[in-house]
Length: 339
Image (cartoon, rainbow, N blue to C red; front, top):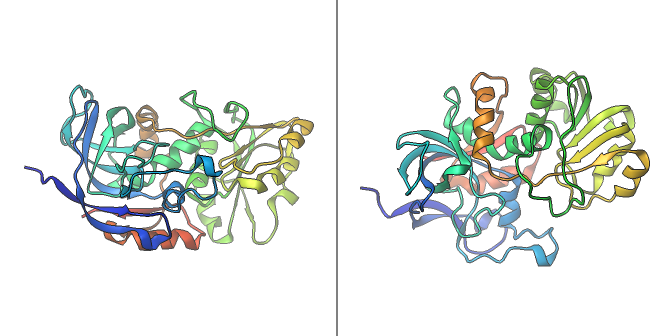
């Protein structure tokens, strides 16, 4: 019989990595339509530390006001322990992976940094058999972000800071520049663009060049040596995985009729310039999708898409994992393991 308690990492107030507490918490029960998953590994993503800090870069009226304590995190891989009422398509003992409740993300305390997580069945998929839990947990948010930007949105929810609906563009035979190619979303964007037949220019720090070539990049630009926006021209699509106010600098690299996809469009101020240049700018708010995780699973299973791990930490050392994230220059993903 399962204990009603579990170990989890919770925060009782917003702040730096020091607010992360490894402690005993109530174990969730699966509601109707949910799975109870015994977590084996957890993937870290920027929204984890954004929420930990209170989403301080958002306008005040958009910032969260949760009921503390809350459990951070969305990305998990583990084994189904129990089924809620009405669940079909899964069985106890199935190995699954998921991006859980994003963008809601822990607002009701039910995040991923825990030994057990309740997961809406519609947000889970069978884990690729050739992928261990560590690599499977590191995939969901970053891979779904790249997928929804480049392949298929899969939902009709707008990005609240992007004025236009997002529409992926054809990639076969096109030139795609990926800025921030060494990071979580970036290394998946490189691979998906290459899979779809694009010529890919990867922009990252010099330490990533060998990896980028292995992942299929046709050209590599070390941003520490030269600014990509000063040398790249006639590009069909720029995927800026760094995003923010600096994304507008890539408009001059694009041919008329090209497109710019800033992964983080908050602060982008180049809308008028983009229109003048004949460039489409759009972004999507990534949302949980078990169907899309199931669709991409064969690509992970056969190695078409690789998951790169920067570093991993035990769940009890989540503070150290967030400190690693704060140092930046992350190659791929950071993950937590659960004993």
